[in-house]
Amino acid sequence: MRACDIIGRYGGEEFTLLLPETSLRGALPLAERIRKQIESTDFDGNQQTLKLTVSGGIAAYPEQQPESVDDLLRKADEASTRPKPTGGIASSKPSKGSAERSAQR
Image 1 (tube, helix red, strand yellow):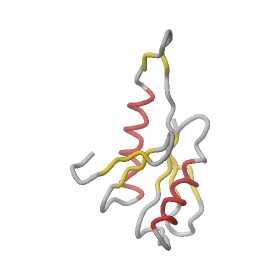
Image 2: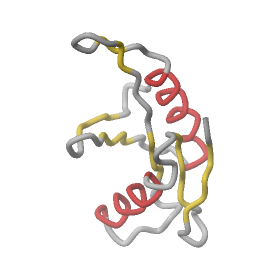
Image 3: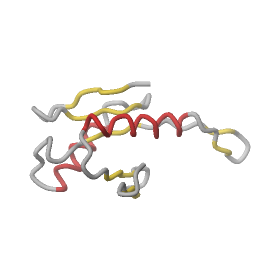
Image 4: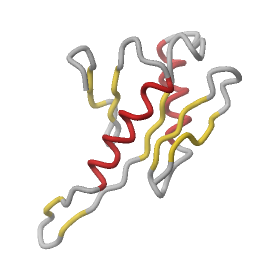
């Protein structure tokens, strides 16, 4: 991540990355690197090793012409539901707003 990028918790199990001046195409490789790093990490549980999967959605401004910040977040949230339950990263198409599976495991 770059110094200008921002990560924050957005919900119970949700995080948001803000990547200024980054297109959908530019955000996908970073999201994939983060997903692969998390999924390759062993997490210590009480008496067992835990593995996590990551599902993510990408939306971009001004590419997708959202009407508001809430609309942009909605687009990312809608895209994030497509890869579940196996994990992966999806983005919304900038032209028509319909979601497209951009990357898989």
